[in-house]
Amino acid sequence: MGHVCPICKTYQPQIAVETADRRPAQKASDVIAFKLGCGHTIGGEKYQSFLAARAKVIAEAASKRFALEAETREKLAAAWKILEEPTGD
Image (cartoon, rainbow, N blue to C red; front, top):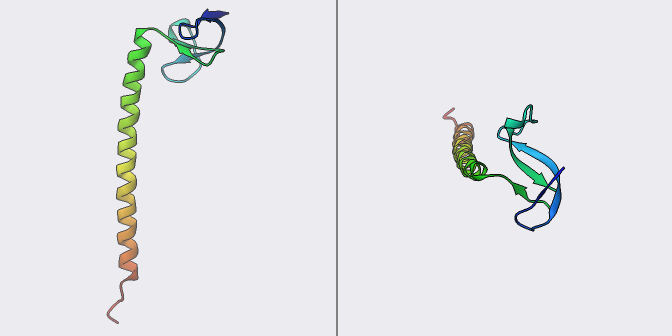
């Protein structure tokens, strides 16, 4: 089974299918795109809008992760500073 790649204009074998949740497809309606032997991934307009939404979700998650990591570093530095302060013994 294969498809004509719209990018390189050649007939390529279908290597894999892509689903929205990255799990194996259980039924045909789960498939949102096809990965071809030439390395390109083809899908319809819905797939392109899905890629844009996916990029937005991943960017939001990354910014939250970076903020949490920065907060963690600050708290650890403050805890270390408290331990390093000389006591008035």
